[in-house]
Image (cartoon, rainbow, N blue to C red):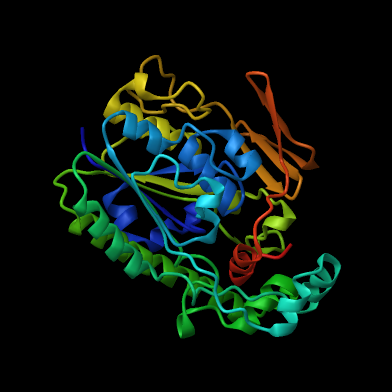
Length: 376
């Protein structure tokens, strides 16, 4: 069995993959539909191949790490996103799990006071929205350093998943990032953006993809594995004004193509299109451990052309966009997309029903979300 490296990077649109030269030229690119519209439910659905994780915005069992562990792999997970905190179950099944995320700068004391009261916070954020910042996140180059070390320290065969955050808005640190005034204008007064400001946003985005691409190449070149299976994908994309909206704003429950169409690139694994990001786990697991290793509970399917009894890619995909008790659903057969906005969503399986509901977390974790520009 070969080593397997699954890399996800935040906010990578499929139609911007040309900015990632190594990924786009060395790996075979496939187009995939995400299971959700922002980081936590989307990554949870990728790691579990299960729509229940998207509905609940947390990792449910069995996970891809548990499945690879059952197949005899050492499992390693690394991420610097607060959305992948162990309190949401992201450490499940990993022999080694490092979550490089700590509460950041508390910032404006007025905002800190306002955050304690729902109504005051909502009003305050309307006029003084939190500006996304990456200064309290582990930089991608350091995450890759840790990933190389963690991978090389463990015994073969190894399955490693890592999530890179440098590609998240505002797309860098300091002068590399989208300027604060442009960022806020894009969110709250997009009609006032000048052509030059729009160009600035796209330039910063392409530059951050280039930096991430270089780190992925360094990772693959530096691990002590002669022939690893490498897979690259993203949790979601970002909007750049196509329908009057910018970036990803999970509270809007949007399921636009720019948000839910991402790359699924592989170095030595063919995937039949169309596919969902939920199909990544069963496809790589079946390829390395056999079809019988794929848990029956998974909603994702093995979409390799050589899959037993396979009929190519899936004939439809579902994206669930949960936010605080309701969700938007997008069903598509790749010719038609049907969207149900702000629906009451419940998933029933084996006599158990789960619903989209608000996750209660402590104030430190909420602050980390606000540091990334999320508002409630």
